[in-house]
Image (cartoon, rainbow, N blue to C red; front, side, top):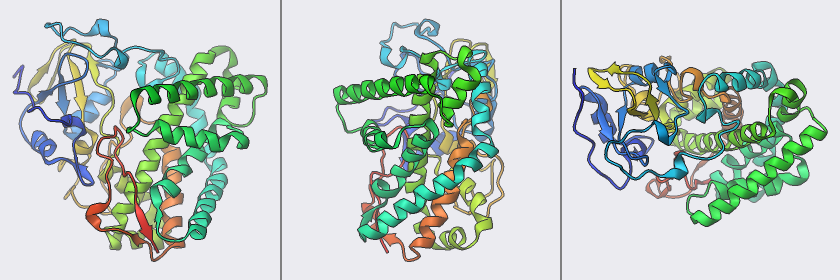
Length: 407
């Protein structure tokens, strides 16, 4: 058993966020192939052990007792007085399932799970179809060239979140514009802070209106079914989580996934022409693209051995989902996009108690939006040189800055 390995070499981009085209950077594949684990720097002071193999990531994410998510600065012991970034470790976590552990996480998730059942998603499906068709009509009216990210991939998930949360039609344009600005990493810290405050104020008002007059949306149902068990802060936190987690992830999958299909015409034809191939294609795109690079580091609550490396109680553990999803131990020829693949379980939505609650909604949006786009515009093609498509390499959620297309 080993207790330490050489740390990753420093870079201007954290190792856990490095990408190369559609996949993880080669140095992540190299880490995955070597024995044992390495440690990587974190913004929190102490380094974190990095997991890149599929089995290791699933094991860690599936063991919430040994690897805590809701840790605080007091839980860290860096032994050297390293500077920590308090912005990453403080703040109101109410309603944010990604920052909670059982039993608080279990209580909230049990209330939310019925809102994301297949039956509830089917009820939302006609409205998603309508939203998609409206944006396809708008693209057609606009004519080529068009930016598929700004005019299709970004607004569709935003409007679906509006439907889910009960954002009134009169507020939806402003809601979409504010959401789009919030996700712009090119803004200054002051501007992002202001937008976050504006969004929080809007969510507080939305929850207050829902308490006065609960509708048929998710907030209304939660208030009717669990009013005495949910605080206003928790309802606001849930709404904010759905906005961020349910918008940028799906929009980036739509943009990046369309580019992937355009660069693989045989795969695109299957998605366009065979409705039975679409669900499997969505799963393969989720695996192959893995737009979520990682989640927040976990804190080991006990000594655990992984791959011959001793992770001690109090150590931080990070993980890389793109590397795990392209692990040769998961599927044959993992670097190849194959929408007919019958692979093992990918971790594009995570695993364990923090497996993405909104996965059924994200899948539904993609199963509708990809084939609808390709059927409406059978001549869809990239309207710039392949090497000029701008990847969003500096965003926490991987995607495209823009996708110029014509038809």
